[in-house]
Amino acid sequence: MGVYIIAEMSCNHMGSFDKAIEIIDAAANAGADAVKISLDSPDGGLTINHKSGNFMIKDGPWKGEYLHDLYARTHTPWTWAARLKAHADSLGIELFATVSCKYGVEFCEALDMPRYKVSSYEACDIPLIREIKKTGKPVIVSCGMDWHDAWDELQGYPASFLYCVSKYPATTEDFDLNVMREFDGISDHSAWSNDVAVAAVAQGAQIVERHLMLYQPFDGISPDHAFSLDVGDFGTMVSSIRRVQRMMRPKQFKRPDRQLCKSLYCVEDIKKGERFTDANVKAIRPGNGLHPREYFRIIGLVSKCDIKRGMPIKEAMI
Image (cartoon, rainbow, N blue to C red; front, top):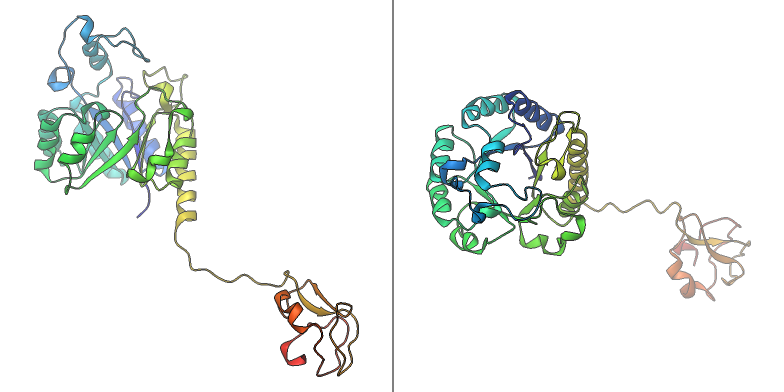
């Protein structure tokens, strides 16, 4: 099975259904396996509308915004979901969703979405995870925050866990890919770089999730633009991952041609009964004679026949 590449739409549609369709088209054209949308609802179990300091984001790209205001501005309208899924189905690419509440799970079940995603910030929500488990469908969990309870809860269930640095954007120096073999894949929020995702695949990642945006800033600035790849860079990433994939595929060893390797050759005419010496035998190219490892064995032995200069030394001659 190949690496499962997910194009994360997030809020890069910028409130435009047409842009959402374009992102699905771009993901399919790039060779991604799936598009993921975020069916968060600011009032549906994600947060509440409350203007106190507790509900204000303290740092990062959304510093100073209230949670409810941010999610109200950036969420994907649920009314789009059926049409987006139908469009993805028509292109042969999967579409599924990140959910944050019981109602999101019920909604996705009505659309027969193939799998679920749980974000790093919801990985601690065991009631949500138990709702997903009732569906029997696979779930992917990002492990950027408090995820160990989710790990315990999902033992024996078809779940995949993604290494994630919950920093937006993350730098390449924030990642420790030595831990990749403990996870099934990676959710990469690094800044405009393919390096992390491709390196993770080389370390064994079987799932790669990456934000995909349209050409920006010409198309406007999305709140997620700092850690999203545009169409061209996303396509380059997919191509690079597929190449790494092919390199890591088990292959049957085929012994290479020794034509240009060294072997033992007669470099001065040798008469029958004459001894082999370091003057008349050398290890030179090409590779048609005895292996150079035999040099010390044959030196001092005698030739069974006349050997002309430029002939490879064969066992039958000794």
